[in-house]
Image (cartoon, rainbow, N blue to C red; front, side, top):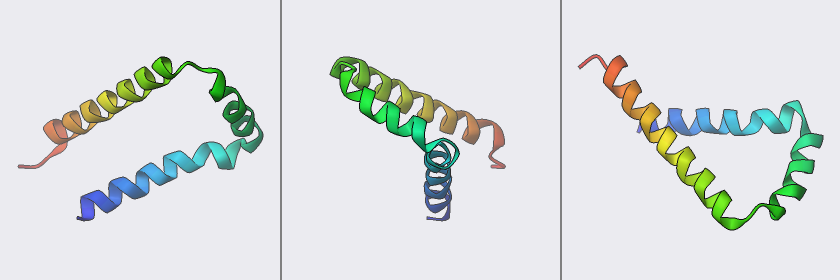
Length: 66
């Protein structure tokens, strides 16, 4: 459970950085995202999930002490 909470907290930090650093650019991007086709957004989301899984796998494989 501790690992999950740590991962959740880290995700929230990464999600919050753009809003803190450049809120005006986030607003502009939010307005433009509606113009991107659904298939492109779906592909980007899927690729992000695969990249996240790969990072988790590599992290567990190389840095776990078991």
